[in-house]
Image (cartoon, rainbow, N blue to C red; front, side, top):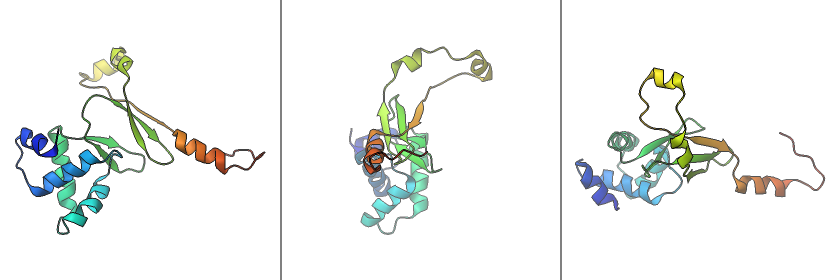
Length: 149
């Protein structure tokens, strides 16, 4: 779905700033932060403020247009894919990858959690080191040198 139709379908007021922010989100596969989006959009719209970007992302999140991925460096990242999915986060290069795990929805929620309240959704984030970072690490090691970590 294109950004214009998606935004129009929410009933939100269509503004050029909102459309541009949504275009950036929909064309980016790296789960950009508000800061990343601001840096990209100000090239096209030099008068836009960071506050406008930040408030627009919060509005999009409230309307289900994007979801927020809490991130390792305390920056939130934004994901325009609002379908149910999980994330793998590389702790070295900060890459975020989507994956499906249907078995997660089939797991029984622990009694303790059910006593806390009603579960509305399940979300899983797995953190580790991606294959690209592992390859770079291996190729950087001298033959016979032992890894230290």
